[in-house]
Image (tube, rainbow, N blue to C red; front, side, top):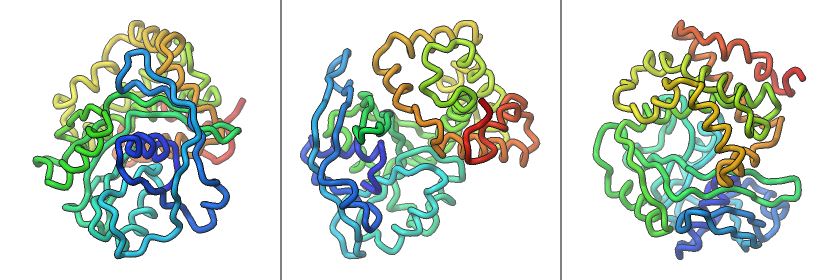
Length: 317
């Protein structure tokens, strides 16, 4: 697992429970600061509809070096999209014989995003878990029963199938997205719509039960669908993903508000994103708006929220 972030911690634990040998690469000096365990408080939905709570201290192994001759089979690379170039530059000369699973949000062209990594050595996926580290250091989150994998216009290679199998062995259902580039970009603008409202209020945690804010989030994403089309995505191939944003917000916003307030996994996922100074929401909104301006696509709602993400410090109260 590259890094010790939320996604690396949650899925690292799940893969370890399935019998895989899991280690975390962290920056030099971080291992001692992190200690020898991750404290978990997870709602695991893989096998039970109501979920199974996991509250335990999980002993983990860290490494602060990655020699080119290592023997790892899979490197799970889940970092914020704006940190991906740095991570790719680090991994390229240290690839060994591993497959790299790019496992997160992406806004650039996928093949450009991986720099000099050989495309034949890369698998593409997206996590469905979410959560965050609390002030007490506990990793709280929700582990959904599925993960998303995709390809860039061709069948999965042997390496990509092996990466999928590792997650299947860990009890996950694999959802396939043949146009993964388009799916990633739709997911990105959906996040931009939510984060724009979350930043107005403070964080995503403040959107729990907030029908009005969620209605505005749906409308913001709806305005961004032409941006995805302008980047060359055929939205007819993603009808299921697009439908919630084209449906009347008088239906979708109250439904999501009810889910965030009353359905434990959804509420927990939103509530875990409570840091008003988190950088990634701002980067998502900034990059989305910059691309809209570059392509001349109107995004008035996202522009109206710009004071809340245009600088590093929190937006206006």
